[in-house]
Image (cartoon, rainbow, N blue to C red; front, side, top):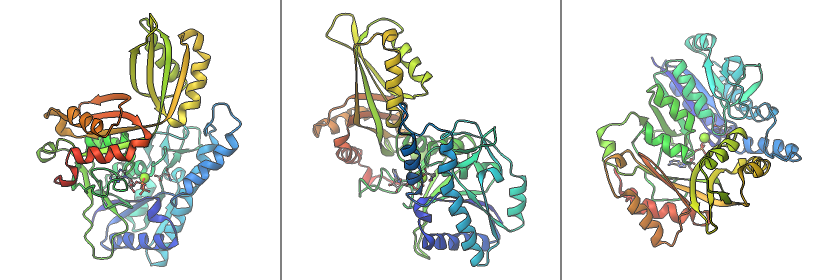
Length: 417
Ligand code: ADP
Ligand code: ASP
Ligand code: MG
């Protein structure tokens, strides 16, 4: 007997028929005598639909986006529906089951609405219930804030609910079921030659996720890595009896280091902000970053260049696309203080990254990457690196071309899993 957490994403619970199929997978695990906790997302498309309602009613605001703390109450409702539906589907198959909302467990978070962090999970009642043979179907993505409000964990947050629950329950397994049969060398929707990896190191998965590979939410990987909890990513769409080994996200071993690059990720949710005619004096970059941080805007890539006018510089940085209005409002207010002539925004940019722990011990990765892009006439706007990653900002129009070129340049279609 084992304690298992199974998570099903939006496409896996997209309609009643899919929910019936998920119920069959859960029943198989329960029938083995396992204690089973299931975490579900909202039906695919549902969270987008709910966010659009919030956006529509918030549109009058200068700051834009969903800034109201009622956002969480609204968007968390999608998961409430699927948790109830899966519990019904399980009961219809003769499996004891009940749904749990975030506040009922309770899964406690901080008060950062729309991107709350998990502070703790009170597992006493929940563990008692599953140990008595009742499958616990948990609404993912949601929790309860310190002031008793519904909170949500950021887009893709059901992955984090599942990993956090697995850690809190000291589970033997955490299986993330999705619409692809594992983690690939890049998004298989863009590069059909992409290959499924049998294993990937936590650190690599963390970089790939944070650079845009949305197969796992970044925080879920962080949490798994910090607790050394391996995660298995597999498909809920396999036919009965079909092999479904998936990808194990786990601590690194020597074989993983042999791969110089393990994957390519891309993110279209970027915006490039250029401050032109900035005073070229010490402290000015810190000042701009301070203004952004006070406005709660995360600055990612930064590059400073000298401009043609004497004593002036240009500063180029990237922020998330959803934060552009907030960033511009803050810059406008601080324009006199900072002292710049003009601000130019370009939302048609994509960040493309190559990731691999093998980069620590191999040279020439940057050269291969930049040459592959140059050969296709793709201009690089900004570059950022870490020990196991190189990212470039490019014109969004070339996203697919760049991802395919890099996938080919690092021979990932031929890579060993
Ligand atoms: P779920 O609804 O199950 O949470 P997501 O849509 O959040 O699923 O994540 C799965 C999707 O992630 C896949 O359909 C795929 O298009 C995308 N994806 C991006 N990069 C990768 C990658 N490297 N490996 C696998 N899938 C990836
Ligand atoms: N339903 C939420 C979203 O679409 C959470 C999730 O799917 O993990 O972002
Ligand atoms: Mg997801």
